[in-house]
Amino acid sequence: MRRVGLVLVGGYLLIAAGNRVAEHFGAMRCGCAEDCWCRRPGLSLFRWVFPWGHRSTYDAQEKARLDRTAH
Image (cartoon, rainbow, N blue to C red; front, side, top):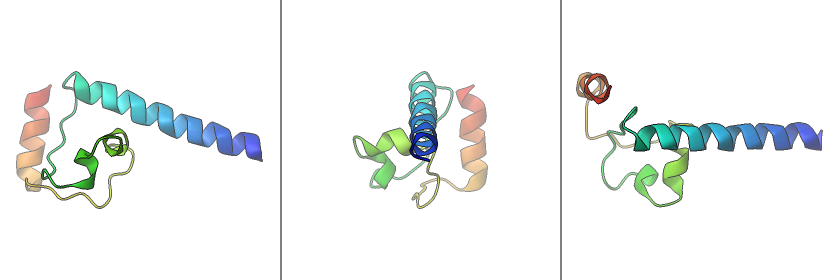
């Protein structure tokens, strides 16, 4: 049971790190307000794997447009 927990936590952190790298290279862009929790150092790693509770400065249409131009 402990091994399953470690594998799940490890996989979660691996996905978080991969998404952070993708964001760094411009594959994804966060549209949150500057005071959102996901803009804080350390917490930004979990921005894409914990998508709840963000404060967006963009509406859904603006966010979709930004995502299309990032590619």
